[in-house]
Image (cartoon, rainbow, N blue to C red; front, side, top):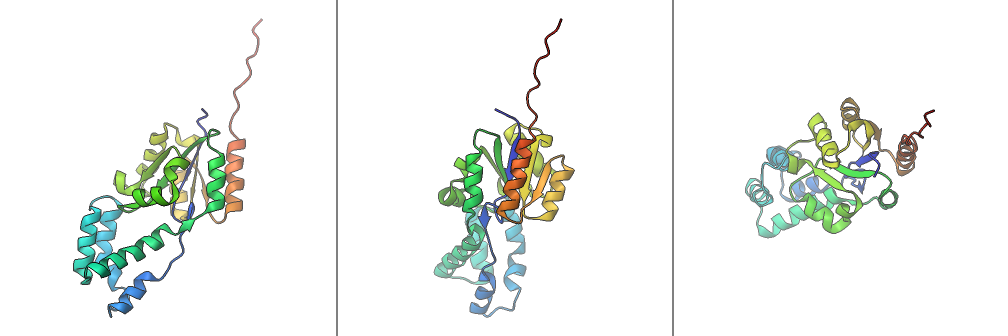
Length: 212
């Protein structure tokens, strides 16, 4: 199989993830000043994004720091995951699925403990691409260059053969600095056009020139 490679982000690219306002609704419900949830949970969210805390311990910390009972905790986490998972970007997913066998396919995502299980169940990304690299599993987030190295290593490809697609400019610039080609996702049309150009530029095997 070719070593030409496309690696995509999930949230904001393969998933459509608009802000739902769930945090402010919970602050209103709990009669907390705006920003309280983020301030109290900042270190927990950070730990969960790099796998330094289990999902069980996340639940314990949320309930303890925000004073939630069992039912409130369940509702709070459901709201968190509703925004996190968003809805599938069906058009782009269908296009990527059609690329199977034509190039190497991977995902590199800044994530949170529990993401793989939920995204697999909902969207079957494990059937869409060959490898998924989650920040909470490798302990490294984009734009750290080691995240891009891990994604390339998982697919056994060099960065120069990869096109990376993300909706965050800093991650796109970091991918370029790591030696990859990179595209800032803004819409499906532009992204599909860029991926197609990347694949069309794949060097063909040179014809053998007869000797003598």
